[in-house]
Length: 252
Ligand SMILES: O=C1O[C@H](COP(=O)(O)O)[C@@H](O)[C@H](O)[C@H]1O
Image 1 (spheres, helix red, strand yellow):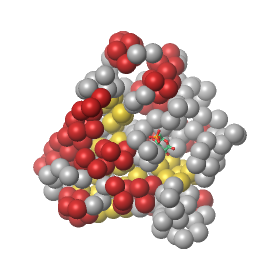
Image 2: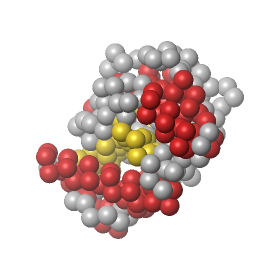
Image 3: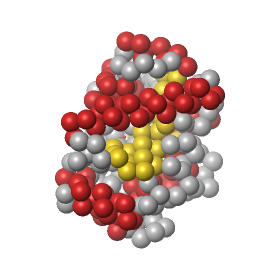
Image 4: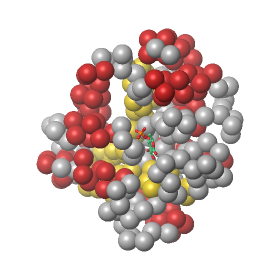
């Protein structure tokens, strides 16, 4: 599917979603500017802001563009949307990713709340710790999501035995332990994910999607029934809902 077709489908299926279609070469800069503007507004309104970020490969360029922008970094708290249950120095750790690519230069003044700091983390304990950490933070001002080619977002993986619990809007949990489905996605580590209930408390969700394989998955999500059931692609639970503003970035 071409991006223009996906944009038309997204506009008809998700009229409540704000859709941005910058040229591919400009998407990182435009998205970083947009996030920085939202964070500045939050700081102006409340004296502080909370930014929650996803892991994976896609956010690296975004982090590097964002960290170079003028922001009152010392008034910003940064935390995660999901994490792999590995020590913080592990190459697959999202803590490591954020420290290496976002919290550099002026951005190092931001307060960072990593979910895992133990050298040999245990999944249930790490989830309990992350829950307590998130309970002590305010509502996220900007929450940056990603999407995998299996339709997962955050670490809400299709067919995980923990998906029903993580999607339960009545759960008091902010973070949930996630065992991976079979066959396991890579990297093959159990995860921690922000629950859907807590993701939807954010003031704004930002979702960049790029690449033919991901567009095909997104078009499948657009065809999922509404409201989505437990068998829907996890990303459908973000895009079909109408209570939390979503900003979808589909570069042309
Ligand atoms: O495993 C993950 O994958 C998704 C997408 O990652 P990407 O490498 O395709 O950008 C990411 O959003 C999620 O946070 C992460 O755990």
